[in-house]
Structures are given as structure tokens and as C-alpha cells.
Image 1 (spheres, rainbow, N blue to C red):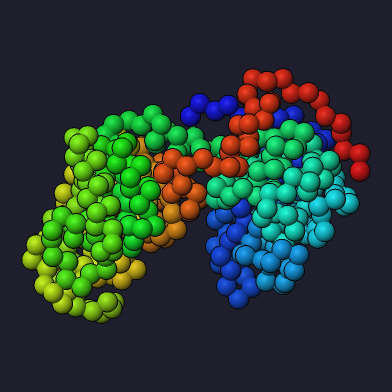
Image 2 (tube, rainbow, N blue to C red):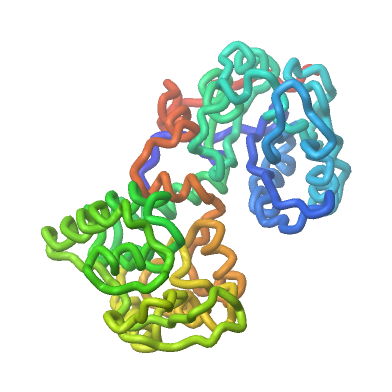
Length: 409
């Protein structure tokens, strides 16, 4: 990807006060972190700053706190504990940090309490951004998962800070997505699964203008099958979006490209893990049956298509993969992508769960940490946090970097 913003590699870090905006919105269970993937993903950037002799502070949101009225469940204390374990050094948790009235020392990391507890965070408050910018030297964005939000520590602060850059995680995400969508090796295949067309209509419309083949699965495929005139029994689908599905299909046909729909499916009369699964050809589904996965013939066809791809973008499962009897389609997809010679990128919560369930992470070229932002990028929307880095007058990577004063407090 041709960048016009700085990265951490362009920064002189020794003796600087570095403010990192991360995405530590990790899943919690009974007050404990149940998956620390997002925390571990930021470690390379944090260690680079610490090893260079910077005084580092990092913040994130967690959950959906009420601004100005934090509660115990909103605290990043579990994240501070986990960072201490991963870095092998104490990580103090700082409250009331907006004015910078706390000690920062070279080689030390301080975790700043949940930024969404601060009044003005959600409204992208410029005055608060100027206050924070007054006591930092370098702003680093490592929060790809929230790059689609226009909030103070993501947008206004990136514009107000003396210097600003993308951290290695954010830069890698943008490079991977750019590689997949801006200059892809052809054929470009996109897989979009999940339950509803309505939540991914913009993505489907955008991809229909770009890809060589669009593969749809799950409830989304049911809507497309119904739009094509196939019986779908009592399957989940969206009758109000049949016209939209036909429009996406028409776009692909006009471009001479492929809309991939299953030829056979796995059906059941109950939505249950122990329901009897039956393979049916599309067109033979009975009125009291529901589609819960693609069938074996479709799995074979899909594997052949994946092997021919130059680039593969994957978001969403092909069926109810959480149930063993209806996991074969998503398993075939995951394993087919992992074996395919083309460049592959996967993103989205259900997709990452499938990657983990089927153990294919090592075979996928890039796994995005973003959820909603991954979809917005595929849709072609601007990401405010990235736009702020691009809008800075010092954005170009070959710009001279003026020296900043060393830590003085």
C-alpha cells in the first residue's frame, strides 16, 4: 500500500513521551480476560518504544462506559495486570490522566484508564485533544479495531499532537487490506457469510464492483437463493432485501463476473445440534426444512475455486459451524483458504472463531484484528483515525522530523 502517513519507523523515540492509542476492548468473563489476542498484538510496538528509551503511556476503551461516571466493570485494571505479565515489568494504572499530571519515566509503561470514561471522548473534543497534546511528544495509533470511530483519542488527538504516526499493528492492517483490495493478484475472490444481508449490504455492493467472484454463505446465501427463485423452506432469510440481492447479482453479471451460490445444501427440520442433517440439491428443499450449511458437492466446487484464486478476502461463515453436523462447509472453506496458493486475508469475529476452531491460522496470510472496521474498509468507507494521520502537514514519510524536547516531568 502506498502510504502518505508516518509509521513508528520514522520516529526518533529516545527520551520522548509517547502516547499510544490501542484497542484493548477484550472479552471479559467474571472479571477476567478470556482472550488476550488484542493485547498481545500491540506488544511489538510497545516494546519498540520502551526499548528505544521512550516514556510510554497507552490507553483504550473497554466496553461501553458512561462518560464521567465510570464503574468497576469499566476499569482497565485486568489489562494492566496482563500487560505486566507479558512485558515482565510493573504497569501502573493511571486515573484522571487527561492533564498529564503523573510521572513518566524512560523505559516505563503506564496504562491510562478507560478513555471513554472521559467527558469529550465520544464527541471528538478538540479542547481535550489540545490538553493531552500539550504533555506528549509523539502520538501512535495502534487501534485498527476502532479506526472507524471519530473520537478524541483516535481523531482529534492525532491532529493536535506534535508528531503522530501509525504503529506497526495499524500499518500492517492497512498494508494487508491494501494488498488485497487495491492491487490484488487476480482472480480476486471475496467470501461474505453470516446471517443477514442487511448488515453487509454495503460490503456486498462494493465488492460486486471489484471482485472476480463473490461467494455468499449462511443466511445471506439464503436470501440470494430466494432472490433467484429457489425454494428455501423455513430457512432464515430477508424477504425485504430480495431486490437488493438481485441488484448485486446483476452487477456481477454485467461485469462478466461470478456470483457463487451452493448447488446443494445441508438441511434440518430443527435448529439444534442433534437435528438430523440431510443433503439436498438446491431446488429440492421441502417446506418444513431449513438450510444450515452448504452440501458436499458445493464443498468440492468451492475448493476448486479457491485453488485458482490469486487473492482471497474472507468475512463470515457458510453455515452454523458451531454445530458439528453443520460445520463441514465452513471447515472446507477455512481449510481450502489455508491450502490455496493465493494471498489470503480474513477478518471479523465469527471468521476468527472459525479460524481458531479449525486450526488454520498458520495457513492464512493475514488475520485482521478488526471487526466492524474490517467491513467498513471492504465497503470503501473512510476511516477517521486513518484520515487524521493523512491530513497532518507532516504526513509524508520522507518529511523531516524536527527534534522534540526530552522528558522534563
